[in-house]
Image (cartoon, rainbow over all chains, first blue to last red; front, top):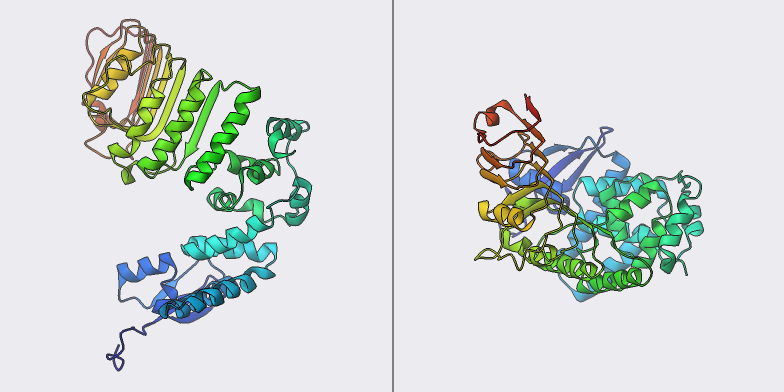
Length: 163
Length: 260
């Protein structure tokens, strides 16, 4: 806040500490894309170091990468930027494996990154949409844990969806 | 390894939120955790369009099976959603359901009495109901409180209210008056300071109070007029029981008081 009193945006830096001790230094405007951090900043005010014991450094890094992209592009609300953001999001989720998806979702949900959760859940949904049950099981390596006959019974009840 | 199935149910719900009813039905046979998430999926939170699709689904069910039991577990954040659920109940009513269980996944503290009001007309018009269970609602009947013609729960035998906040005694009195055959009444953390139970056929009454509820709104006085009562179960912290009063009419055969 010292020298930049002429600019409208504050460039306060926050330190985020992940569960494995890895720390990230990010601008407040970036970190507050996450609802949880925004709340902490508003409540505590002066605290610059925020510990996040539930998020591993690797995934916190990815979450912050997303935040940075979206915080930057939000400042100048251009229509072209919307497209750039969409394209960037598509790339971001393109090759995520199941394990990464899981940890990112857990991290984004814990940090209340609503938009990011939305992006990631849509990614998972796209892997389910229009597929047969066997194909979905194959994609996610899901093993059926129903009792014999139980699955057939549920299928019969919902036969309209399996036609 | 299958990690996705291990996601918390609230996140699985968000995934289901991007899917069509057909895809959700398919996801429900993947495994037990997906089935559980699909069952508890609050699908009324989304657009009108989605509700419409749900109507189509109900209609499909009507073709080949009777709805005997209706269980709706949904986020009810506003009056609009409550109206959508009321519509579904109205559709189901034609099938003469014997049991309706309605669970709101929204906290009652975010809602006003007005938000939940649209539900009660459609619900209490279900004259076939044998069992009714409500969880996390604020209940008020539009004033002046309904005549017996709008409350038609005359077959009701079992009523369970969990975390239901009543605006005043009239709602409770109206329901009991409209349900003369009621035998089993369960009240868990009822939000009503003065409880009057006047129910001639009532056999079992359970009142459970936990400390997690707000002070001042929980039941502090109970008046019973139930000559056929056989079992009374009061489970409440000592601090509440001090205020409980019983009328001499009470002749319960089994009488349980749990004091912390």
